[in-house]
Amino acid sequence: MRLSPFILAALLATPAAAQLSVTKPTPLELPVTMAPHQGALLVAFRRPDGWSAGKSGSIAFARYDPARHDMIARPKDAKKNGDTNTYWIQASSKDRKATLEYRLMLVSAGDYVLYGAAPGPGGMVMNSFCYNSVTLRVNAGEVVYFGDITPYIAAKRADGGPFYFGMPWSWHPDEAKAALASQPALQAAFKPGELKGGAGYSCSGQMMTAYDLPGLPPLTAEEKAKIAAEALVAPPRQAGPNTAQTPILVPVR
Image (tube, rainbow, N blue to C red; front, side, top):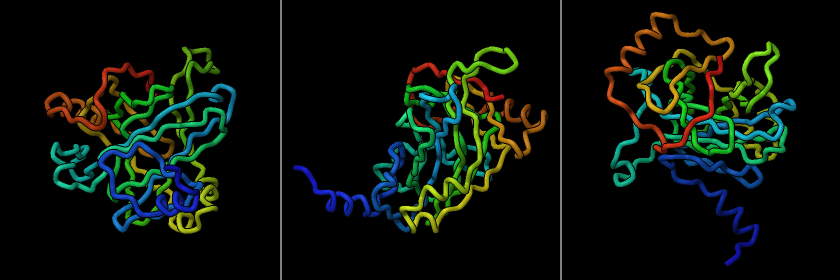
């Protein structure tokens, strides 16, 4: 049975229940309504040059406990118990030919940490920024902008070094807010993310590294040593899908 555009728009405008894992973006072409316990994370994929043109990528976030400085792992019985928290968010680019594309992810309110980011069409983020990452908070009713990510695969470096594979970050809040012009309620709820650096957590994944953003204080050598020591004795935590794929990301710095 084929639904009419009017019925489809009405269904999509209905608040969706919080998902334990959010991997599908909410279309901005149709009305969007957030449930009382929900907020939204807005991420953009930006391709400003020839080296990023035609490239795809994915970025992932995990639920975070700032007091414990660690991820909050999804309980094994979360679905059975009717848990409404979001524990894993993964946004992937779709239109590789687009200079700029936005991904709106409806999530439950809470704190999140940038778990990893990988260029390429693989669809799975397998690297982990456990040695130094970025956190942000999504409050109910807010559309929180994280920033823009640019996918590079085998990009030539100006200094003649090895080809660059990575997902550098940039900040364009005015453009991001303007992109919500067709959704007045979302635009009114728009908020530039209050990003904080120096976040560590128990390491897991096939590549463990760090992600530093401009203007955020990096971890000191002592803090990095402390995180590394704790990672050796802390029980592993699983965040997100567990696969055997090989990551293609190299450290940003």
